[in-house]
Length: 204
Image (cartoon, rainbow, N blue to C red; front, side, top):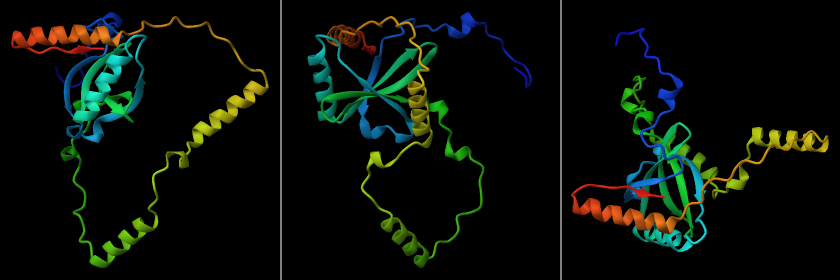
Protein backbone atom coordinates (compact mmCIF):
# COMPACT_ATOMS: atom_id res chain seq x y z
CA UNK A 1 0.00 0.00 0.00
CA UNK A 2 1.37 3.39 -0.96
CA UNK A 3 1.46 6.56 1.10
CA UNK A 4 -1.84 8.43 0.95
CA UNK A 5 -3.88 5.27 0.41
CA UNK A 6 -6.40 4.00 2.95
CA UNK A 7 -8.28 0.79 3.69
CA UNK A 8 -11.94 1.31 4.61
CA UNK A 9 -13.65 -0.95 7.16
CA UNK A 10 -17.38 -1.04 7.78
CA UNK A 11 -18.78 -1.23 11.32
CA UNK A 12 -19.34 -5.00 11.18
CA UNK A 13 -15.75 -5.65 10.11
CA UNK A 14 -14.35 -3.26 12.71
CA UNK A 15 -16.36 -4.64 15.61
CA UNK A 16 -15.91 -8.32 14.69
CA UNK A 17 -13.66 -10.35 16.96
CA UNK A 18 -12.68 -14.00 16.36
CA UNK A 19 -13.60 -14.74 19.99
CA UNK A 20 -17.16 -13.55 20.55
CA UNK A 21 -17.08 -14.12 24.33
CA UNK A 22 -17.07 -10.71 25.95
CA UNK A 23 -17.15 -11.61 29.66
CA UNK A 24 -14.47 -14.29 29.87
CA UNK A 25 -10.97 -13.60 31.17
CA UNK A 26 -8.53 -16.06 29.61
CA UNK A 27 -5.32 -16.60 31.57
CA UNK A 28 -2.71 -17.72 29.04
CA UNK A 29 0.37 -18.00 31.24
CA UNK A 30 1.67 -17.61 34.77
CA UNK A 31 4.93 -15.65 34.97
CA UNK A 32 7.19 -14.32 37.70
CA UNK A 33 5.96 -10.87 38.71
CA UNK A 34 9.49 -9.47 38.48
CA UNK A 35 9.60 -10.27 34.75
CA UNK A 36 6.95 -7.68 33.82
CA UNK A 37 8.29 -4.16 33.39
CA UNK A 38 6.15 -1.67 35.32
CA UNK A 39 5.88 0.37 32.11
CA UNK A 40 3.35 -2.17 30.83
CA UNK A 41 0.86 -1.67 33.68
CA UNK A 42 -2.20 0.53 33.27
CA UNK A 43 -5.43 0.53 35.31
CA UNK A 44 -6.17 -1.82 38.25
CA UNK A 45 -9.56 -3.40 38.95
CA UNK A 46 -10.62 -5.59 41.88
CA UNK A 47 -11.85 -9.09 41.07
CA UNK A 48 -14.63 -10.47 43.25
CA UNK A 49 -15.59 -14.15 43.51
CA UNK A 50 -19.06 -15.24 42.52
CA UNK A 51 -21.28 -17.12 44.93
CA UNK A 52 -19.71 -20.48 45.65
CA UNK A 53 -16.39 -19.47 44.11
CA UNK A 54 -14.67 -18.01 47.17
CA UNK A 55 -12.52 -21.10 47.80
CA UNK A 56 -11.18 -21.20 44.24
CA UNK A 57 -10.62 -17.45 44.39
CA UNK A 58 -8.66 -17.76 47.65
CA UNK A 59 -6.74 -20.76 46.32
CA UNK A 60 -5.58 -18.90 43.21
CA UNK A 61 -4.58 -15.86 45.25
CA UNK A 62 -2.69 -18.00 47.77
CA UNK A 63 -0.72 -19.81 45.06
CA UNK A 64 0.17 -16.59 43.22
CA UNK A 65 1.27 -14.93 46.47
CA UNK A 66 3.36 -17.91 47.57
CA UNK A 67 5.07 -18.35 44.20
CA UNK A 68 5.48 -14.64 43.43
CA UNK A 69 3.70 -15.03 40.11
CA UNK A 70 0.94 -13.31 38.15
CA UNK A 71 -1.42 -14.55 35.50
CA UNK A 72 -1.11 -12.96 32.07
CA UNK A 73 -4.61 -12.77 30.66
CA UNK A 74 -6.63 -11.46 27.75
CA UNK A 75 -10.20 -10.23 27.84
CA UNK A 76 -12.54 -8.19 25.70
CA UNK A 77 -14.63 -5.17 26.60
CA UNK A 78 -16.97 -4.12 23.79
CA UNK A 79 -14.74 -3.99 20.69
CA UNK A 80 -11.41 -3.70 22.47
CA UNK A 81 -9.27 -6.68 23.40
CA UNK A 82 -7.05 -5.99 26.39
CA UNK A 83 -4.00 -7.59 27.96
CA UNK A 84 -3.96 -7.84 31.74
CA UNK A 85 -2.12 -9.18 34.75
CA UNK A 86 -4.03 -10.96 37.51
CA UNK A 87 -2.16 -10.67 40.78
CA UNK A 88 -2.77 -10.96 44.51
CA UNK A 89 -3.18 -7.80 46.55
CA UNK A 90 -2.72 -7.68 50.32
CA UNK A 91 -3.08 -11.40 50.69
CA UNK A 92 -6.81 -11.97 50.17
CA UNK A 93 -7.78 -9.93 47.12
CA UNK A 94 -7.15 -10.48 43.42
CA UNK A 95 -6.53 -7.51 41.15
CA UNK A 96 -6.82 -7.39 37.38
CA UNK A 97 -4.45 -4.74 36.08
CA UNK A 98 -4.80 -3.87 32.43
CA UNK A 99 -1.59 -3.75 30.45
CA UNK A 100 -0.38 -2.09 27.30
CA UNK A 101 0.35 -4.26 24.28
CA UNK A 102 4.04 -4.34 23.28
CA UNK A 103 3.42 -2.27 20.15
CA UNK A 104 1.80 0.44 22.29
CA UNK A 105 5.07 1.11 24.10
CA UNK A 106 7.58 3.17 22.20
CA UNK A 107 11.14 1.88 22.11
CA UNK A 108 13.47 4.46 23.71
CA UNK A 109 15.96 3.73 20.92
CA UNK A 110 13.49 5.35 18.50
CA UNK A 111 13.65 8.69 20.29
CA UNK A 112 15.53 11.43 18.51
CA UNK A 113 19.01 11.80 19.96
CA UNK A 114 19.44 15.01 21.91
CA UNK A 115 22.46 16.68 23.33
CA UNK A 116 25.09 14.40 24.86
CA UNK A 117 24.78 13.85 28.60
CA UNK A 118 26.87 16.55 30.28
CA UNK A 119 29.54 15.69 32.79
CA UNK A 120 28.21 15.78 36.36
CA UNK A 121 30.57 17.18 38.94
CA UNK A 122 30.76 15.49 42.38
CA UNK A 123 29.62 18.68 44.14
CA UNK A 124 26.55 18.95 41.87
CA UNK A 125 25.69 15.32 42.57
CA UNK A 126 25.94 15.87 46.33
CA UNK A 127 23.67 18.93 46.12
CA UNK A 128 21.08 16.98 44.13
CA UNK A 129 21.20 14.13 46.67
CA UNK A 130 20.74 16.62 49.52
CA UNK A 131 17.67 18.10 47.79
CA UNK A 132 16.09 14.67 47.26
CA UNK A 133 16.83 13.69 50.87
CA UNK A 134 15.30 16.93 52.14
CA UNK A 135 12.08 16.27 50.19
CA UNK A 136 11.92 12.58 51.10
CA UNK A 137 8.64 11.49 52.70
CA UNK A 138 6.88 8.22 53.39
CA UNK A 139 4.43 7.66 50.53
CA UNK A 140 0.90 8.57 51.57
CA UNK A 141 -1.62 8.37 48.69
CA UNK A 142 -4.11 10.42 50.72
CA UNK A 143 -1.74 13.38 50.53
CA UNK A 144 -2.34 13.78 46.80
CA UNK A 145 -5.51 15.31 45.43
CA UNK A 146 -6.81 15.78 41.90
CA UNK A 147 -7.92 19.38 41.37
CA UNK A 148 -10.29 18.31 38.58
CA UNK A 149 -11.86 15.58 40.72
CA UNK A 150 -12.47 17.96 43.61
CA UNK A 151 -13.98 20.51 41.22
CA UNK A 152 -16.37 17.90 39.77
CA UNK A 153 -17.39 16.69 43.23
CA UNK A 154 -18.19 20.24 44.29
CA UNK A 155 -20.14 20.84 41.07
CA UNK A 156 -22.15 17.63 41.55
CA UNK A 157 -22.94 18.54 45.15
CA UNK A 158 -24.21 21.93 44.00
CA UNK A 159 -26.46 20.30 41.39
CA UNK A 160 -27.80 17.84 43.97
CA UNK A 161 -28.65 20.73 46.30
CA UNK A 162 -30.42 22.46 43.40
CA UNK A 163 -32.32 19.19 42.72
CA UNK A 164 -30.83 18.93 39.21
CA UNK A 165 -30.80 15.13 39.23
CA UNK A 166 -32.16 12.39 36.96
CA UNK A 167 -32.90 8.70 37.49
CA UNK A 168 -31.70 6.60 34.52
CA UNK A 169 -33.16 3.21 33.69
CA UNK A 170 -31.47 0.41 35.61
CA UNK A 171 -28.99 -1.55 33.52
CA UNK A 172 -29.38 -5.29 33.19
CA UNK A 173 -27.01 -7.15 35.48
CA UNK A 174 -24.26 -9.15 33.79
CA UNK A 175 -23.57 -12.84 34.08
CA UNK A 176 -22.03 -13.95 37.39
CA UNK A 177 -18.86 -15.98 37.01
CA UNK A 178 -18.43 -19.37 38.70
CA UNK A 179 -14.67 -19.32 39.27
CA UNK A 180 -14.45 -22.87 40.65
CA UNK A 181 -16.21 -24.30 37.60
CA UNK A 182 -13.96 -22.25 35.34
CA UNK A 183 -10.89 -23.67 37.12
CA UNK A 184 -12.15 -27.23 36.76
CA UNK A 185 -12.80 -26.82 33.04
CA UNK A 186 -9.49 -25.06 32.45
CA UNK A 187 -7.53 -27.74 34.34
CA UNK A 188 -9.17 -30.42 32.21
CA UNK A 189 -8.35 -28.50 29.02
CA UNK A 190 -4.78 -27.91 30.23
CA UNK A 191 -4.30 -31.62 30.91
CA UNK A 192 -5.72 -32.50 27.49
CA UNK A 193 -3.51 -29.92 25.77
CA UNK A 194 -0.44 -31.18 27.65
CA UNK A 195 -1.16 -34.75 26.57
CA UNK A 196 -1.46 -33.49 22.98
CA UNK A 197 1.69 -31.37 23.22
CA UNK A 198 -0.14 -28.03 22.98
CA UNK A 199 -1.15 -25.12 25.21
CA UNK A 200 -4.42 -23.84 26.60
CA UNK A 201 -5.80 -20.83 28.43
CA UNK A 202 -7.47 -20.56 31.81
CA UNK A 203 -10.91 -18.99 31.36
CA UNK A 204 -12.25 -16.91 34.25
